[in-house]
Length: 454
Image (tube, rainbow, N blue to C red):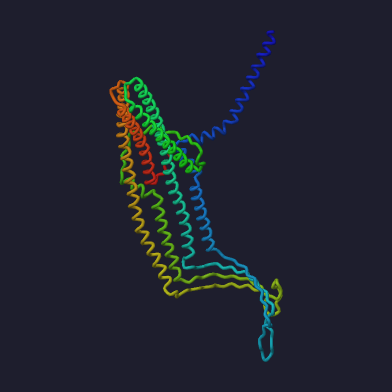
């Protein structure tokens, strides 16, 4: 019997061991996928920014524009190199070509004539037009790279703002849930006091109305969370309805360093891609002016040609002239009169240069204003944090005292509802001030051209 029991016990232990091994294997095999999913869903703000920079289509769009500009450089450089062409023609004349010599008729060519040639043209001088076009295309690559930098700055700001909006929406949803719990408890107290004849039925009705309003506000808060999630998912190039778990800020800032407006404005004028892009555009216009002036100069090219001409499709038989020949020479072309077109074109480009010079000054002033406004937003939001924190402490204490007083029938139901409304507003204002400050800092980083991920 003992052996049988031991055998049975051994079988049970064996089954448990096998079951544990299978479960462990399943967990182990599923863990990489779940880990990857958790790595995506459990995001910090900085990881969300990194994910967006790697996956947002606007970055790929900017990269393709850069590649297109690089291809344009290759095309412009090819204009400076030799160009070869192949021509083939066939001609049939009704009468044979002839010439008269001392009263005699002499045929000078075949009635059917096949001709083909290979021509190579090397530009030697174009009035600096080709070199200027190459310079413009090179500058265009730099311009597209600067546009990508601006795109990165904008995307970082957008992702941070979207994340802060999502975190704020989650906080406000929690506040709404807490309000519902508090008002539900107040409704139960009001109903209890009413059954005991301590309060009027109005207290119960007011509690029910307040709770219903709070439930409606919670539905709006839930919708705001979904909207905020959709925006974050869009920026991260994920399905809009996919759930996302964004880790909240560990602690809010209680102090702010002094912001030097002049230094930050100078940093913005130095770092902002927009200013650099305007400088590139100005240089491109100067190169365009050289292209316009090139019409005043002749164009000179070196030509080389090999041709064959004959009465058969291969143009290898010719009874009247050489069936093949090679030539080399120069070709010059000078448009010395175009009815004032060149002068008008150069004047147009000069006006564009002056307009862009004025535009650069305007954009510099605009950037200074953006930096100043961003600094003001940071100061305002940070001051509001202190005010909101103090108001929150007061609202919490007021709510605690009012609830105790109502239980002791010292305060009224209206006092309780007002106290809860004050607490909800104070909590909302506190979180709004903190996330507004974080958003203002993100806006300041964009204004000064700082690509700060964290």
